[in-house]
Structure formats: structure tokens, C-alpha cells
Image (cartoon, rainbow, N blue to C red):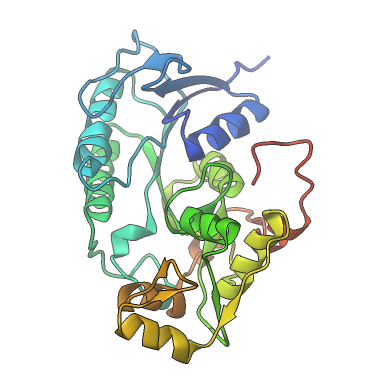
Length: 304
């Protein structure tokens, strides 16, 4: 009988980490978890400490731990990655998967951006993720580790953060609006598929954008979230009215601030090409918008 494969998952108690742990356990991995909290098998703050693995060797390491907080990004994302990698050198894993971000491209608009696009991150978060990628590329080559770097677009799921969470909260409390005839699109991926890709793509290695391949309209995404959030209704406002509000620093619906930066986010497309991943593995991701509208959530509390 073949030995049960072993895996280490960092950031195991976080948003994506929970999905990765579940995915690997369902695939019959013996999973060791690492995080700062008490729920982890190994408690460690990677931003300041190198973990002690007691000479254990893992077949697979999935490094999820990270932060978008600009004041902590370098310490957590860059230094934390270095501390983890150094601790693994004595017994280097066969495969290492790094959950990076599409933020390494530094773009706020564009269509079908692929992995050949220049890397020019515009935020501390993006810069720290790119620095971690660059460090790991050299480390993996030096230690004969098969490295997979995943650059997800916006990730949907229970515990999601950032722009998507703000959108969901705005829909829930009635302050979000759709802009009439808005043709802007966004690339998305479900956290289920981030976890599934981490497992499958670990066998091939490489750097991949990660999306569901559908690039829905922002309006369709918002309506799918509204359906998921107790069938909420979203008001629709004309682009002319929104532009006037942005120009004069006005507030829509009494308490929803709008400025030119926010207007750009709502009306400009940002999509990524994930065809390289589809060519590398058998890849049939969840259609996120359809999933939000049709999935039966009663029996699975993790899947938003």
C-alpha cells in the first residue's frame, strides 16, 4: 500500500486556507496546518519567526498565509515566505505552491492580461507578492523543488475580503447601486477552484493566472451576490448622475460616497487570461455567477 501523501498548509485558518485544507484532506492527504491561532497544528507568526518542523518532510507545501494590509504586507508576504522556505531547506518538499495575486501586474484596467504582461505592482501588497515570487523561484531551483505560482483574480467564497466583500456588504445594507448600461467586466474565481488548482497544478509546476474563464459583467456579478444575500434588490442609477456625483464629491442615496476613483473601479473592465492553466491541466472551473445563483448551500456552510 502506498504511503499517504503529506502536505503543509500555511494560513490554514484564513479565507483560502480553509478551502485548501478541505480539498487536500478530501484527496486523502495527511495535512499539517500552520497559522498564528490556536486551531493550527503548528502555531507560528511567519513574519517574525522560522517554524520548527522537527525534521519532517512534506510532499507538498501550499503557502497561503498573507495579508493585503499595506503596513504589514512586506513582513507577512515577503519576509514570511523567506522564513518558511528557510525552515524547509533541510528536508525540502517535492512540490511547493504559492498563492500569489494578479496584483503583481499593477493594473486597474485591461482585458485578457496574460502571464507575459510586465510585472509592475502599484501597491505594497502587489510588491510584496512579487518579491515573494522572485525569492521562491530562486529558492526552488536551488533546492530542486517543483514550484507552482498561482495568481488568482478576485476570489469569491465564504470569508472573502476586499472589493467583493465591500460590494456584498453594500448590497446587503442597501447602499450599493448598479450603473445603467455598465459594460465593465471582472475576472473571478471561486475559492473552491483556488484550492483545487493548488492540488492539481502542484504536479506540473509553473506560473498561472487563475480565473473561472467567464469574465462576467459587474452588473451580473452584483445581481448574483444579491440573489445569494436573501434576494436583495439593487437600485440602478444612470451614468450621468453618477458622474455628477463623482465630480462634486456628492453622496448617492444619502450615504454612499462616490468619487472618480470609485467610479473608475465600477466602470472599467479588468480581466485576466487563464488559458495557460487550461493547457497545463484538465481544468473545468466553477462558473462563479451561475454557482451563486444555483448552488444548494444548506448542507455546506463553507461555500458562499
